Length: 489
Image (cartoon, rainbow, N blue to C red):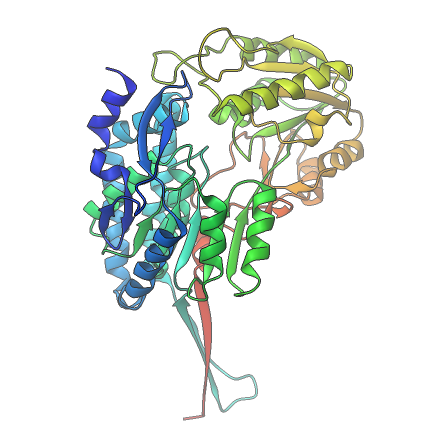
């Protein structure tokens, strides 16, 4: 069965349009755009291409639904999320296949994203009933202080192409739990997974207008129009730092609440006392999740000079054994990158690194044939100033640079404008605490290559953005606090 044939069985043509106020509809001007299979460049489907006018109608629907949704019992909101989690669990294979078709990741990895992404619904189903304020006597006595938590109001969510389910559920889950309505704009490269998620949320009983989905290639027009509207109260974005800066500037006039999960340049520190088997295992997870197309991906491997040669040899052996191919084929470990531009960017970084003096241990090229593939690559002796150490790679490439002291390692790790994820491998508890406290990153993985967890606060600092998604902290992004002063009884 071809990609388009499989797609037809997963998402009906009627559900490839805009979802506004509970109705699936085409764009008023009839514009549509293609969704491409990155494994061969073929067209999988066409979806509606919304204008700013349809975006405003989506916001109209969210505003109209806001009061009733905020007044809905927390238990009811939580039960909708729980049912949505169950539907994702039951249809995990379908969602994973659709994600693999439009994004390229292997089906097995896509199933992992479904399991991870759906957990945000289960977590916030439980948190919906735990939103609370406080009651206390004023310190001076007499009067009482009451605080009340309220939903922020209508939100705009802009989600990326690399995790088309999970980056949506970790915004939608807490918003539903808190009582916020929303307009969601998925990435034009991978809109189909979000459209299927919208179908499942409808099946779970989410009322019309709470979730509105607008697919579009007119990103700037849409965000500028909605952010100029004083009815929009919150913007949450996952994507590049450059785009995030634009959205933050646009939020200023209406003083909208913003959450920004932006770029990364994650260091992966391997100290001389590290368990190298564990470090290589962790490196494979931290580097190769999503073909390296992740903001949390290990970008710079900083390895102590005493173990760098052995670590590089072991990592190259593991990377070279990975099978590259179409994500739906059996045994494939590494799918295609998202588009041709991504391949060109990765290839240029590798070429420049070799020119700067780095040595290739494995990979360093794109395989012959159709699709946007790049072979897993390991580089050693990479100069610290090489562009591959300063730019986000977003591909299956591991550059290794050495250090000799803890202070060197910490300084090199922090020598970036980004501050999202970082990784540390050592068996020394004192060093673990020292390094973790010294790293300027929102997340630190110690002897693990996986930091993402729905129960933990995900987010960064510096040019990686601000705000947290997931954990107890995640729902606070969607709540306002009202203080009520009461006289003494």
